[in-house]
Length: 425
Image (cartoon, rainbow, N blue to C red):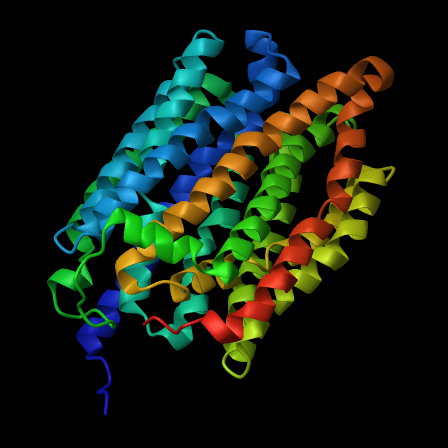
């Protein structure tokens, strides 16, 4: 019979989870702060909506996704220290965030954002692999949902801190203030966080590494995983696109300043996202234990219900009404984080977990972060001659109902989970 983990081991797991959460908060704070700063940056550097979409999305996502694959294979190697890899990545993206504040033109800002993407490529695949090695499978969805809380927390902090600092000291100094603390945090991570593979505390049996071709065959040979990648990528496309342009929508349509938008929209969006992310992991662990397909039931239903509610929010006549209505669809759209990342880790063997996370992130961020803000920005520019400043609102109307697409694919994937999930260790 398996013995209970020693108290020291349990303490180490908790320390690691909390550190990884803080790292992921910095990850999304540095990634998303550019959204709340986009409007003052655009005015200062005279950028079009298409350039805003390129700066906030594709410039970051292209290098983030491409470099994520080889870095993930490095993280899967038994000799690799995943905590040190995460610490180096954190120091790099934090430093590049600070450099964004020194940019004098669009090209320089674009290069700094590319640097942020290069750094952040080393974080999440290694973190997912690390968590999955430390936490039993029956608690995996909750643990990964806990880590994923960094997404809404980092996003809300980016909006609130970025907006208030932008109003007070300008967008350039804001980048410097936000970026530099991450370099210090990297030293703490390298010192405190330990890799269970090197201490004999991993929850999975040691297994020989597998090659790149074998890992990719295992990943794309899983029909459930392919469906899950489609669902998560389409969800990310809408999430990143809507978040970027909803931030600008409240400034253009409802006349809020960056600070007001960051404070009000940031807090509402962040708290709803935190609640949805936490709840999604709990629901997946509870109901997935009795029937594996229910790991993804809540995301499928949630996104279908959220679509018309999001439309009502964007059509509201006042910003107060819009924010109040957005609470529910934001919560429902956030249910998928923990279940999705947990299912990915359970659909492949332990030796390919970081690679599987990187492949998912490749499509999710290239399609979602890369093309979501850019596509909606191009669409806004195309509609602007007819609708003027209301072009962003029209774009968000369309984005709301596209939520039916990820809902369908989450449902289709759930039908395959009983046959495939947690069959490989």
